[in-house]
Length: 421
Image (cartoon, rainbow, N blue to C red):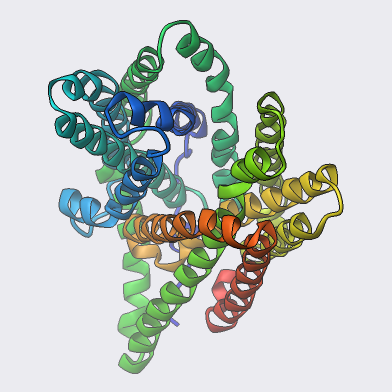
């Protein structure tokens, strides 16, 4: 068979996880800072209270644009350093548009402020995935598939770790304004650009690694029957469809429940606003534990198996949240569900890096787009389901979606056994 693990056949240099993780920490911290302040942003630019949903949609639209923008910038070639650097620059640009331009322009004309704010959130929604895809592609080209789960999950710890930047940024926002804190985080993103340019090998070096592996596969193709080569290509295409289906179901399961828990706690359970910090802490612990689990299990148990374990935990945790007899027990279910969903997401990233190994950057961008579409649709449906039928409906659909993802994942691995590792 012509398809192989390209990264396993080539001697590769260090993936340099420390500078990559440092830049990801800044990007994730900035992105996570934006979310809690979107309601304030909406008021400041003239959208009004409760209209932050439009800005959240703008973030999702940015994520959906990743494959198109990547193709426009670099075509079909993998350009991880270029993508990561552009992502950091775009993060800084998005903060300037959203924090420096939009509020003053709203004072000139309401429609101008709203339009500028939407441009800002779309840029931010695009910027973070560009950084993510670039760094993930870079590491994937340098770490054999058998060890890639650990490397990528170490880097993914920066998603939960991004919360470390929220406390000082939040204190600064309270002392000054959200705009000052956002612009400072944008400046940190810009300062991280020379760090990446210094420590990441240029894209020609990465493409040389991939080309060497591709040449080896091409030599096997030349000796293989044409029908075998065509079958391999068909297998890759089908694997891509099955994997993206898993991603859509996974993010729908996450967003339908996690996206409404804050609303449920505040409006339905009448939890004191001060106690919502406990909810945030549970989320952070769940995410951190999920990523740490993949650091340990991803390569030992296999990426597909670890993804499946996470999906089952997601279904059990969110399902229990909907039927728990008390709020404390429901929050236990929330913690389990977030642990599971984060485990599944991080393990799935390593899995995605080998679905289409000759076009990793393009395929990882498609994964981001698929997750953004799923989150946007589930994010819109979640509050309506909660207010109409209660949290039990949301959690039941989340559990079913997660279990459906397990079924598709099993089918994927049976179809493409090389992804079991």
